[in-house]
Amino acid sequence: MTKNKALVIFSGGQDSTTCLYWAIDKFGQNNVKALSFDYGQRHAIELESAKKIAQLASVPHQVIPINTFNAIQNNALTGNIEVENTTGENGLPNTFVPGRNLIFITFAAAIAYQDKITDLITGVAQTDYSGYPDCRENTIESLQKTIALGMEYEVKIHTPLMHLNKQQTVKLAEKIGAMEAMAYTHTCYNGQFPPCGECPACLLREKGFKAAGVEDPLLTRANANV
Ligand code: ZN
Image 1 (cartoon, rainbow, N blue to C red):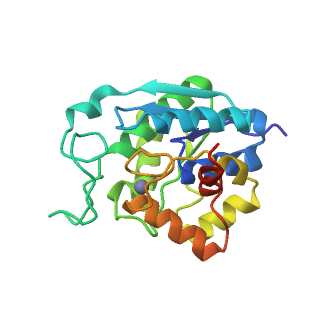
Image 2: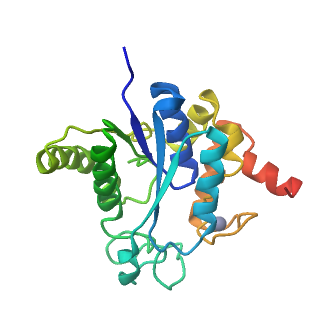
């Protein structure tokens, strides 16, 4: 039986790298492709990480530009404002980019349609997160239905991390052989290597590795200065 082809929405971060290796494990390396979006994120380091990890995993990697988010200036990931450690009036941190995952998944589905890919993988999770509404399971299920209707094409959206906390995600990454690649992932909201160790993303990452009892390969690489 031939395996399905899979497209991984891939940012070069910890979660999407885990998803990339999950997909390779499940669908086979020859059936996996990674997709990144150049959406005007503040830090080019993200796309550099994605490129490096895709090479390491020996999977094709496509980067598509979506400049539209530059027009949405009131968040700290695409706008020109600082990341804050507190939540705003809407109960969300100011790194929330409204609709980002909806748009990413829809574009990914369009590429999947074109490439006859039946399975999409995204690293969204309900747990441990900042409460981004487009990371919830009901949002993803609803979007899967919308895509099937709107494109007349059945794409299955996999969310292997949906119910895992950061500790479990680290354990999963270890189990499926993603740790070498983990050394090249990018998490820090301040776009630094070595990571700042102080922003919400760095702190969450640190908490997960600590709880899992695993040394973070990114920090090992940073300490070795390579
Ligand atoms: Zn940081």
